[in-house]
Image (cartoon, rainbow over the protein chains, first blue to last red):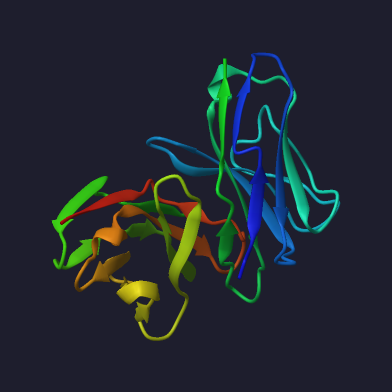
Length: 114
Length: 114
């Protein structure tokens, strides 16, 4: 079964601090994604990747960087965290085959920026 | 630009009732549609998808959805709900001929009363 894990599960950060959220997948999927989920907004795509070494901007990339050092790992980096980045962050993996892209989500990371 | 709308933020039914969760999209071309479920405190899980063929697609746990091009809809249904179906349900759309990106609706919270 698909397996996507995220760490940490909960994080409290201070404004201006650096935060790194990590994601690992054992599905051998090429594509990986970072979303944030806020009440009233559903899921919004921050960054995504087509494979190791690749990162692309999603709909709301400002204030975030991403890193994909390997097929399995995809990190989201907040260089200078702000309270507006308080949210729940989800990582997902998927394999675009034909016209289908079922995504497999991790359990989420709850981030509070004070 | 395609969009997806879930008009009902909350739906409450009793165990054993049937339920329909609505999803409407705006896009004129061929698209890929899917539904995901999110239980409280967890990531999203794939339920079902449609791209072509039979407009009624079956998913896990007795869920099905019906695609209607004339109504621009992809409503999710279940004939008899269980308390464990209580969750947030997300509809997602992706155009098949260009961007791979999934666009999620804002979600519908389904509450099943005992």
